[in-house]
Image (tube, rainbow, N blue to C red; front, side):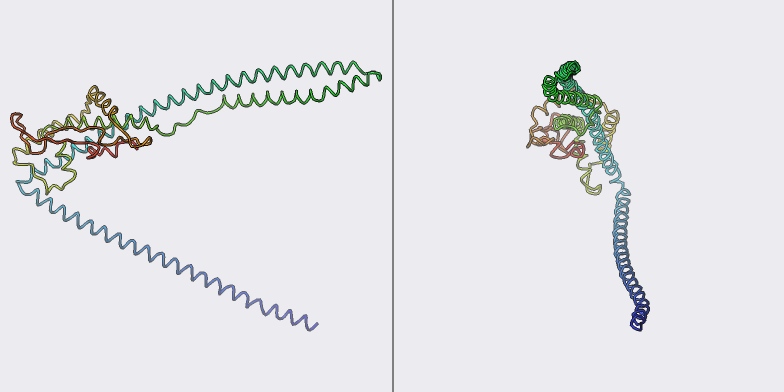
Length: 352
């Protein structure tokens, strides 16, 4: 009895110690989690401080550039230069916008065309498959009907042989009936399976259109390249295309466009160019001719490439910057590859 009381005392005495150990263990894990959370918050705080420093540095740089620009514009000699510079950037941006719009428009047209072809092919395949299933179903139904007729005939004969002296005839008929019943069941199952296939085929939804084919993307891209060349030719007067390219690549402080009179002449040409771009009047016949030329000459480095090799699309010859506009004077010209030089942000517009 005393031994039992000792065990009970030990049990009762151990319960508080166990609870205390569990509480301490829980406090330990809570402390570990708090340390992890504190460490994470410190890292977040450090990241935010670094981000704030970067933003402050960028703000200071922006302020410095703005101050420099204000001083530049405050100089009467540079005022017209800045106007030409920003108008050139506007021409570039509008030309890039027109190019992207054409690509989007052609992509929509080509997508609709391929979607229609996909539906036509889907419906043709479905009709062909339905015709095959109908033929198979007709054969299976005829076979099942023939077997069922034979089965009914044998059952009728078996009903007529009910006398005891017909035992051996009934036995022979039953031996014939068993495989015939199996064949008839199989024939009915085949009819049901073919009918189910036919119902499933009729109820099958039209397939979702995925992405343009490689050939479809090539068609769109060659037209986009042709339009980029057309824009290049339209803006070749007074070397506006070359000057616009230069304006998006350099700072306003680093460019010069000549005297005030020369800047005024450039701004007049830029106004005409902006009006043409805003009207978005495309030379469709010229665009078609140029597209066919690019498509015929374009070569691809692999069967999966959708953008032709730059050297295969040809170049546009335009008057170099700073050359005399008088036709009687000799001038230098440049060969421009719109793809190689990424005119009008063409790489962003092309389908890859």
